[in-house]
Image 1 (cartoon, rainbow, N blue to C red):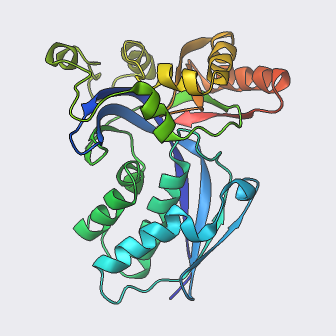
Image 2 (cartoon, helix red, strand yellow; image 1 turned 90 degrees about the vertical axis):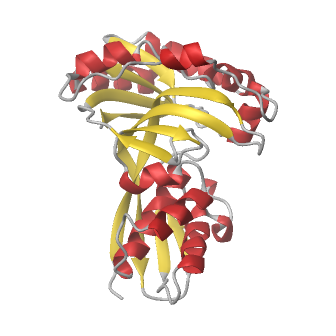
Length: 293
């Protein structure tokens, strides 16, 4: 088996509605997701199944044996007889438990690597099933393409999203997704969003729409997890306030279950200037200026 490398791009939830909680305890979601130009890197080499972690975020990854990369690999091996595995090396740069799907992106990259090493098509049902079982955000990270996510993350509709200039900020405070959903407080079987609200959801721009048109439409959306996440980690409010004070900001919102927040700008220059000002004011925060697509 040759050596392969994949990039694990950060996912950003531009909008996120929590429609309700199923009787089985899972939450039904409706989210517009995009992918950033900041990422981890994952390499697969011949050898026994294992994981080595390097990079500035390695210390926050915890036990390598419990990493989503290994979990995803084992799930695929259960579904593909004779699957050739190997040694993964994760170069970790994205913040952990940050609401941008870092671990899920890593798991998806592992599945893509194993697919390449074993001549499995990326649309193979076994690959998707392993992704779904590994975590709600893993299926969308397989393609790492802007889309609408529905259900618990398994219903995906690809979008024609133009590049959006953005700043992403994380206060380097981990937020557990389960704590945020607990703070949301839905009971099993409880609906949160009625039919009328679903019909009034964000209208997607037509294919070929400009970034400015997208920002206008996205401004009418929300992240339903923002309020409960603020109760879990109030520092998220400081991050949002810092982004909303920057020059040229068009929209600022939390991603996923937090604590990472993002802001959209008219162009890359405005985003870079905003990132510089936030970095100067908060050198302890993780800040990235770039593009969502």
